[in-house]
Length: 212
Ligand SMILES: Nc1ncnc2c1ncn2[C@@H]1O[C@H](COP(=O)(O)OP(=O)(O)OP(=O)(O)O)[C@@H](O)[C@H]1O
Image (cartoon, rainbow, N blue to C red; front, side, top):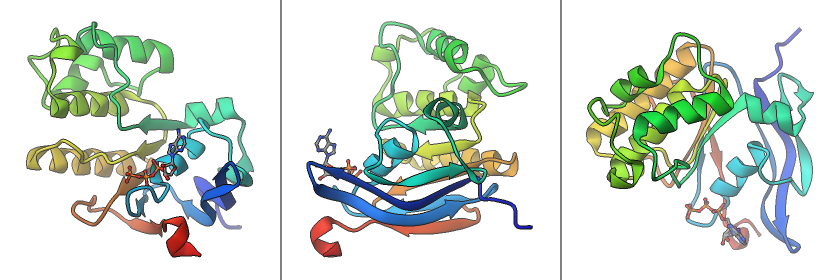
């Protein structure tokens, strides 16, 4: 018998006020794989990730985890979401933010907030307030949160944004390590300017007028 995909979408659609944003989509991603979600500005990449994270309800279709429909609560435990905004408390320092988030969502075995800061190149910034971090440093802190998350599926919305070359390589190393550890990742990107060197599937989203 075939093992079910870690995550699968069947006939997945999202509309706002009867205007189709995307779909129907059919795709899946297995353990050890990345799915690259590509498309122009406004094609619906962020919306798709928010639907998969359980933050938006699909208009039609279903999302399965390990071959079965999952509740919103199960979905929340299953995914870690890196959005455009850092989702950090600006008046707490970097380390306090990570401790706070680990308290809320749990953490990966054998990983500690201090180590995660070192992994993303923020050693020495433990007590820097988040509002004093640069855009790229905030992105790195958000990546440290992903690194600590126990969730098997990473949803990464433009993870390369605001990062220098070393930061882009860091994202790719982190994705590779996460996949080697039995995870999977969905990665949105406008084009192929950067992609992780792992087994990848592709999903192309088109703007509604281009799709018609
Ligand atoms: N909160 C919202 N309310 C209404 N429309 C929205 C909202 N968020 C996004 N949209 C619209 O939904 C469509 C898809 O947006 P989305 O952010 O998913 O695209 P994207 O592919 O991630 O774009 P980008 O590459 O610019 O980040 C766009 O037409 C956008 O204007």
